[in-house]
Length: 180
Image 1: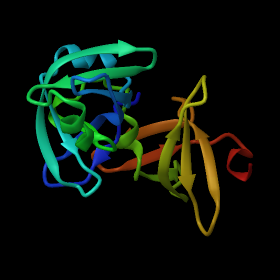
Image 2: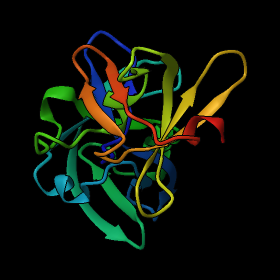
Image 3: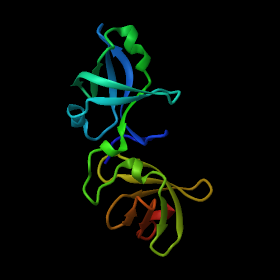
Image 4: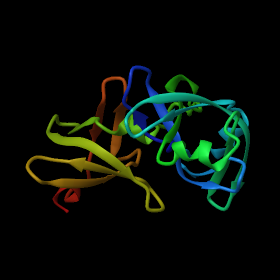
């Protein structure tokens, strides 16, 4: 399940949107949705804008609505195109503590990224670089030894243990999976 990705900084943040451009004349912003839970905007009053320089600014949502696959945001005190332009390229985030709570066997992509992957027999496979969602079962993209890359289905029968606190995933791959 995706709810953005972790953002570096003192307070752990999770990006929920990426501002791509302004819209209209009243300081509205168009943002790509980075969360699997777009309904969260209805309950979120404050976002943290993380600028490319890593500077942060808290912003209050005055209004929002969805348009196609994007969210349109209007922040309080930013009432013109010129005032809102500074947010283009910013990731809009929430503190990690405010992420949507998942079921016990569900994980955010950013929780899996960086996890060490080993077989149930203790053979080190590598580290999760990303989670690829291409329909059906998500795939763990694992950087292996040298320039090896492994794609491992995030399926319960293969990923038999996931411990995000220890940053460890133990897999029981079917024969030939790791040779692909």
